[in-house]
Length: 285
Length: 323
Image (cartoon, rainbow over all chains, first blue to last red; front, side, top):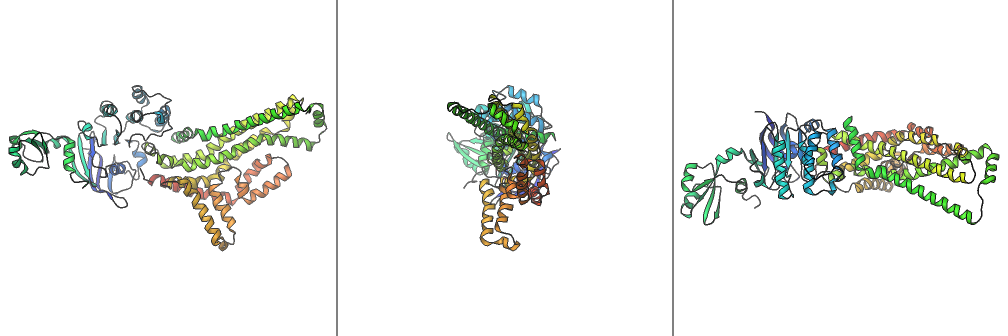
């Protein structure tokens, strides 16, 4: 397996906080990885390290390059959308396409224009005249026309309405993603991306607390809904989390025996957001 | 190379207002004011029955000695250059504020993250901004200044020709070609002279987390005050004025074209000499005058300092992490 990103012992300290505390992970080609964590957990720092935007301690290899020293060459193969609305406000659609077409060796102009034709953007429109949703459409059209091997998305849909959010991920899946590409995405709107993720990483206080592919997540974590009579039995099996719905209790188990749980009640796969909440319990306390 | 061209083009797109429209508007305003003044003068003279030109004027020119004709030529050259003078002042301000914002504004609005998502080196980015400040902006200003100056000359000649004076005869007394050549040839020397100021402002722009203007101006001025107050320059047998003119002035005011007359004592002396001999404003900007500056250590020390400061700006561009 060829790793797109491999990190070991990744550390980063800011003045009085530790953003990354000895992180190890590997990301393979052709995956869509969700990097999920509470605010201040180190998600953005990890992404910035991968993109060579910050210094760090430890070893990090992205597509065979060291992002600290070989950033210029690395960025030919890596693309990122840092946030909505980071396109310069003065630039026009036409200028943005012209510029990227002429400085990026892997940019496909025709493709970009095809994407733009589907939107309401006009060539002479400036970014400052656009809504947030339109800015992200432009940014996405530019990025998707670049044949990059790694795409990093940091909160790409923050502040967008649901139509733009759905369209964003749908375009990525339909028109961009294939087995040669890898996407790393962070977001707080977990429920909107969980069906497209192939891998899941939870980060908390600068440490990776869960790193697994989605199939393994489904096998390892089981949610069971039991009546009041069997609640105590379930509780004795040390669930990760417990909540009450309509007089019944829902327990979330990590690595419990499936057959035992099936005997107790209705078993299902937990949603990523429930799993996240259970894992991160007490983060802000 | 192609990338660098597009980087400079990007700077032009972003700063079209300062680079192109500021000199154009200045020039147009200047022309309009001049035309208004001419109209006012014509109206006044018509009302009071004063006859300018005509036979008297023609006879005057015919009888004029070579020296007098040279003076007429000098006056015409002066009219042509006056618009350029105004435009260069505007250019100084444009270059100053452009340099100060060049590596700061995109960090403030976070669009730096977009630029950094493209395969652009920090060195290329910073150098493209240096070139925009010291070559592109002055070149545009000079071209606009030349166009405005020639228009101005034609307007004056036209007005005089209404008074029966042969326009072409007058124009041959002026030296538009010499003026154009002098102005164009001064751009490289301006670039070298302005470099330390551009370098310092861009260093502040790349380094400051906020308020680059305050840092850029306060740091040298406060240092200058300390130097003056404690008489530190006495150690080197120089007056505090030396520090103000050679350090503070050079890092802040060198962006103004012509500032070397005030800051470089050789330039000042030769300017006074040339102007005295030639009786023509063109002597001020003649290539021999301008390129004499290349012999001044002041210029080259400034260039060396600029190289160091630009290198530091490139380094800060890479490591400044405040997103």
